[in-house]
Image 1 (cartoon, rainbow, N blue to C red):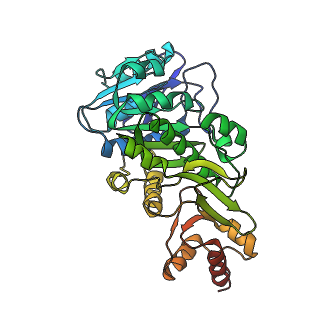
Image 2: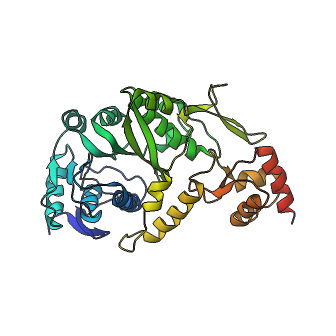
Image 3: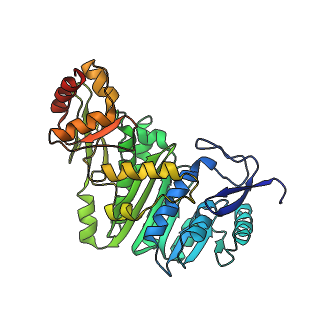
Length: 370
């Protein structure tokens, strides 16, 4: 085995990675090729997504591939014959990716050692994966241009604190949107990132349509389809708005115009999932995090058609001074009175409902007394 490297296995793919690889959290650069074991779940989701979204003969790029973990797993586990390419501007990464590709009998996978924007300016792809160490903002514009019509861009952002509302000025500088703290800040952070991608695509008369957009652990992850047409771009822009939130009443809403500087936005106000994509995704036993994937798919399917901006059981309990009931039982009780209700993946104690805050609080008080 190569000195300083250890062998790990994700799915059915073996990988050589630095001995000092990150095992949890966002990880810290140590000067070596970066590999984060906690991202295995996200890579498992990518495999599930690729198995339902990829087509024969497509050009598929992992643009910031590091060890090649995601790109090689896509090539090895998605079951399609396609033009898989991996890129990283670090020569050490490129060498390691070649080793990992050969170890998995993936000699056909093409390895680049390029600046990603330079590569994207010369080539066009059906799928572009952008998973940087930090914010993805410098790559999105070129990816929106390089992606083929009806192609897909996948974007990861690990700079969650600005998007959560901890550093709203940083969010404004990077993403052109003001973030704000709230009980549902994880959702507004994802929607700010998605709104940014929509605006970047619209510059080129292209629409970004969400297929699978979620928050997990220390990162946000988007998969969007890029479609040509100024009319489609205009329709996407119309789904941008601002979040209004009143902590005294728990009222929350998506509005078209900012009313005060505390409002978050502009951000995406539409759906986060494609029901067709979710239907095709399967948490098969060859995935290392299959149990977690299965649970997440269940929740994503529940909330796919739900309204934006979830509530949490903790905020309802604090506001009413009533002990929180079990989430599942409370969601069932909302459905029994004819309301739309579901869990949400953003918070294990969160729920989506079309009931206004005032009516939700009234029902909560009544249910908690039983």
